[in-house]
Length: 97
Image (cartoon, rainbow, N blue to C red; front, side, top):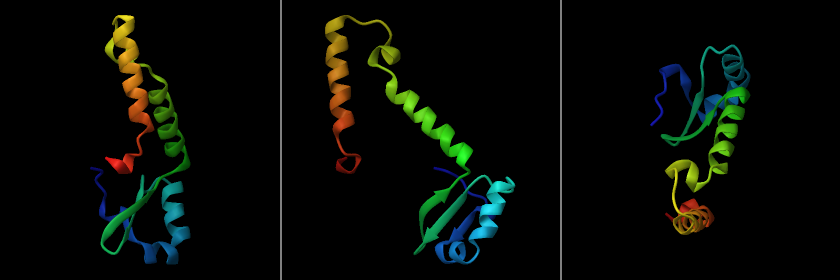
């Protein structure tokens, strides 16, 4: 769970009314993120573009690893079974879990 400072949480209404101010806070690095609350539920987070690009790059690198990268040496049959299982898992929509 991500922790937010008091000045990093805003309502969606407040964001609409003061969008420029919050963008400036992010640009100036006064805050590292802005959490947006709607109907008393955390709905979204705004982060600087540099951080977003780093997160995307990390996610892409992680998805390119093979089973062998995680489990080291294994025989080809085991590798094939693990690779197929991993491929099947990636096909499943996250909302089905």
